[in-house]
Length: 374
Ligand SMILES: *Cc1c(COP(=O)(O)O)cnc(C)c1O
Picture 1 (cartoon, rainbow, N blue to C red):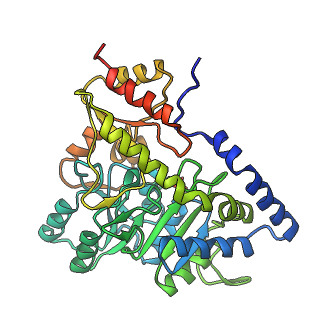
Picture 2 (cartoon, rainbow, N blue to C red):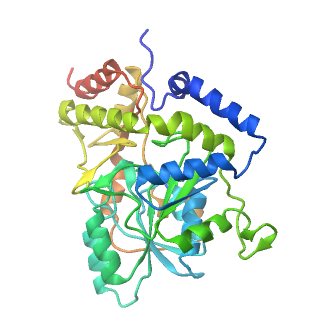
C-alpha cells in the first residue's frame, strides 16, 4: 500500500533535524540555564536578521504575541479593533484578552482582508477607528504598500498577525515591517514550527521592544521590579536552541520547496469543479497552506482524497463571529462577509509541507483532477 500523503510530517522532520536538535538540547543542558538565557537572545538576533526587523522578542506562543502587541499600543478597554472573520480563532481571542472589541470586515477573493473595502469603511465612518489587526493568511502577504498608506492616512495602530507568513513579501517588503508590531508563532505546523509552543513579537521600535520584554516576563523591568501587569509568556531555552540550530537554518530551503509545490498545484490542477483562489496583489507567498475552493460537495471531495490516501483539512469551517464563544462577547460585523462565508463553506487545504516528495505532489494533483472525471 502507498504511504498516506500527510498534511504535516513531523516524523520526517525529526529524521531530518535529529542530529542538530540533539546537539542543541545538549548545549542547553550543559549551559545550566533554562529560561531566558543566551539561546533565546541568539535566536532573537538571528530571526531579526532573517525577517528584516530590528527587534525580535521571543514569547510563549502566537496568541500572547498578538495580545502583548495590542497592549503595548495602548488598546483601551472596549476599544474596537478591525480584523478578519477568517483566521485562527487566536487572532480574535488575543483582541478580547487585551480588552478590545473585534470588528469584522470581509475578505477578498484571496481570503485575506479586503483593503479596498476597508479604506472605504474608514473614509465613510464617523467613528474613527484606531486599531487594525490584519492577518497574512495562508502564507500570503497582504499588499503592504497599500497597508502602509492606509495606516498613514487614517493614523491607525497596526499589529500584523504574521503567524502563517514568516518570510512572505509584498513587492519586496517583508511582512511584519509595516505594522507597529508583528506577531509570529512557532506552533509545530507553522512554516518555522518548533517542537511545541513558541512565538515572537517583532518591531522596529526600541521602546515597544523593551515593553514587550517586560510584558512577557511578569511585567518586570528589573528583577523583582514590576512596572506592568504582565504575563508569563517566555520562550524556553530549549525551543530557542532547537530553532536556532536545527529549524531556522532549514527555513529558506523549506520555503522554496513550499513555493515549488504551490507552483505545481497551480499549474497542474485543472478540475472544472475546483477553484484555486489567487494570491493578493504583489504577494510573494510562502504557502503555509494551499487553499482550494470546492464549488459543490466539499465533504465528498475530501472523502475522495481520503480514499486515495491523501489527508486534507478546512481553514476555517466556522467564521470567528459564528463561534459559540463569541455569543456572549461584544463584537461587530461591518458588511456582508460574503467572501469569508464562501471560504468557510468551500475551502479545502491540500497537503503542503517541505517533506512532500514529487510523487506525493503528483498523487494530490491526480486525485484532484480525477474527481468526478472517471
Ligand atoms: C497559529 C496562529 C495564531 C496563534 O498562534 P499560537 O502560537 O498557536 O498561539 C494566530 N494567528 C494565526 C493566523 C495563526 O495561524
